Length: 116
View 1 (cartoon, helix red, strand yellow):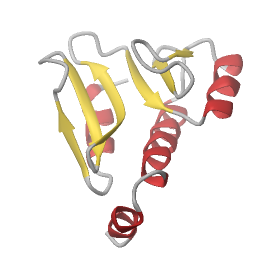
View 2 (cartoon, one colour):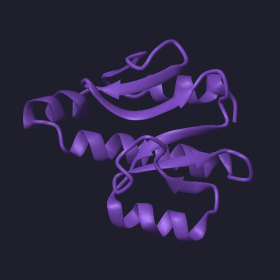
View 3 (cartoon, helix red, strand yellow):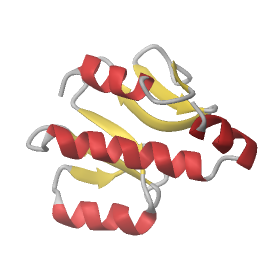
């Protein structure tokens, strides 16, 4: 999966910015200050995505490329290895991650996002 595709897809969502809070090698995409996607720039072979806990378990059972989140809360984060996964699935999972974070934002922020 190409870095530019993921980057542009994430940045195309409302209120998303990229950040490097963990150093220059780890890029993080945030919506309203909350992380929803991150990956290592030097070895862009996977990304970490926020996920509903039940859906996270389902994905891990169905796809060997979906593992508990590396260095993350294993209940709510998955690490997705790109090799062998369809691009559409990855983009759908990015959407799910973004929506999981937006869903938990304060009402005022959610309304701002929905009206963009």
